Structures are given as C-alpha cells and as structure tokens.
Image (cartoon, rainbow, N blue to C red; front, top):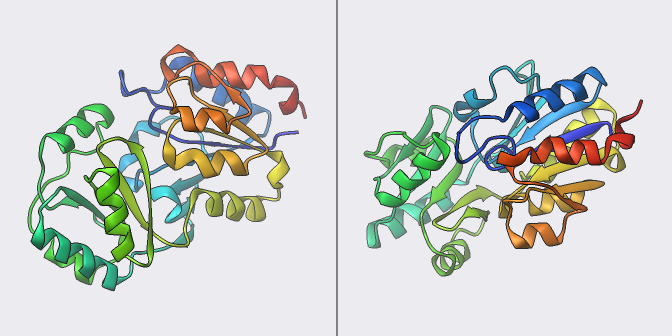
Length: 260
C-alpha cells in the first residue's frame, strides 16, 4: 500500500518544453489526493521557484535538494546552510578563476555573473532569471545551496576543498552544491515520521542525478522516460517522458497499490 508519493519538479512534474504541468499530471494528482495520498515535492528549487506548482494541492515541500523542508502550512521542519568557511573557499576559487555561481539565500538567488550557460538554464526552467552582481555579502548570510557552473572534473576538485559540502548534478553544465546533512532522503524520512507513514509505503518520481538516492530509498521508484540512464537503472519502473503523460502512466501502472 502506498500512502505517500514524492515528486521531483523539473523534468518530472514540469515539462522542459512547455514549462507547465501537463493536464494528465494535474488530474492524476487530484485523484491521489481524493484517495488520501500524501503528496510532496522534492526538488533542487528554492521557495522562490515554486510558483509553477500553483493550483496543485501538496502536503509537503523538500526544497534545495533537502536543505529546506516545510509543510503546506509553511512550518519549517528542517533547514541547513553551508558553513562560512566553505563559502570562503569558494569565494577564493572565484578570485582565481571566475565561473558563474548562483547563491541561494533567504532573499532568493543571486549570481556573481551570468553567461550563456546560465541563460540556457533559464530558457529551460524559467526559474533562473535572477540578477548578477556583487556577491561578497554571501559570507555573512545563510546560504542554503550554490549552483556552480563547472564541469565534472572541476566539481570534484572544488568539493575536495569544500569539506562540509556535497554536490549533485541534474544538468550537464552545472552542479548543485549543498551542505552535508540535508538530502531529499532526509526530507522523506522527516515527513514520514511527522505524518505517520513508513518507508515501505512510499513512492518517488524523478529524472536526474539528484533524484537517484531518493528513488533508491522509496519502496517504489519511477524514472521518467526523459531521465538519465543511471537513474533508470535503479528504478522499479521506467515510465513515459514528462510530455507524454509519464506521471499518469506510472500511477495507473501501480493503481492497485493506492487502493485504501
């Protein structure tokens, strides 16, 4: 029996092509709510990127890859920030070699500068149009996540110096750098404890590298057809892509597990 479902947003609930939630997804989520299923998003987006979910009745929000989790009543149940010493390391690296970084603070995201890689991401997500400018203040404010536009080799080198951080990559041109501790998996467990369901009563949907651990943790895992090959290998079921009713297809495939 499935009592709770966790969804990534970009490439899972929301199409990269239309930047909207397909009607089939909206309808199936409504059906799940009517059955009393707990619905939660687990995303790399911050609070300022959730307008795309307007009209969807959700119970919980695991944002910034697990660094900031809150309920539908806006109660924060977990928050985690990058230590100042690791921010100093990154600022020092930016002084040596400049590359785009988006710093997510309580006031939203700010970039040190923008290039075509950032513009490309915004064209895909419609969520990365924030301004660029002086970021020296990030040393003195809570930073929940950093979007670093580096390749995989540069990511490894950077993380070796930022001792209290981890990273995840869902698009080739950048990685999300987060503090150790908060993860999508931790968010799942916090909501499970709070709301009274168990790990073996959960299902998770995703399409990217930052969804792998979440899918491995859920009892039933669904990889979108547009997902990475690595993700598909760890999924219980590979559904259609987001633009071809993938979420609805998978929910119907497992319809018997939602019978109360």
